[in-house]
Length: 343
Image (cartoon, rainbow, N blue to C red):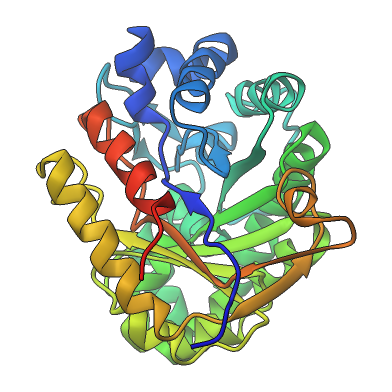
């Protein structure tokens, strides 16, 4: 078995930090100080290789005029779309991330993360297909794929421009990694992914000076070949996907992050159960992981020497974002299990 270098350990967490600071979901998504304090507490307590800011799939949609409902303890959701299919995007101006909605909350948070945290930093943007569904309605987007009369493609041009501009702002603020969240792609066929999602995701990836990850929730096994062919630096997969099967398809040019279950394991298991799941996943992945020679990027490559970072293409992570209910002792067990030596 070849020596492939160390695994990075990157649980997708933000919301568990609410337990440490006493803040609510509403507060951290509307106040950069509250969000940074929760992330700072998580970073100091667990020292992950990468710390992502809070995940919020409604931020861009709200900035574009969608009406969003908030809960004190759960992430927000869109309750009223901002673009009618008939209206389309014709009168829409370019999004101003510093002025529109809550996007500046995430930009200010990232600026503080860059200034204060000695670790690599990640941020999320909503993928163009998913953002189209948030602002115009997912049913209309699905129908637009079937009709393919050009309307959806023009809407995707608009949402791609929005996501690209926001991603650039986050990188300028200090993000080393941009994770493109495209959960709506889980609803489509490989052909429709190739035609309507792959290109826009690649436009975002190619426009930023950062490492890029593509995350699609759920069992995306049929989409895996297309995801691998997407020009991003890595893919993040949910717990429903057989990660060994995906690793077996990868060469040393792409990383894969995953895929401990954020609910069944991280919320409801014991610390001992978390360690067992982490050890089992690492043992399975060890048979198929490969050496990844990546660009030396702020915070990651620097730990492995100047010029290039050499590490495994398997990144131990959770299959999706951890909810607020995750016990802190389970995060500790995840980190410990990820950094223990395995035979």
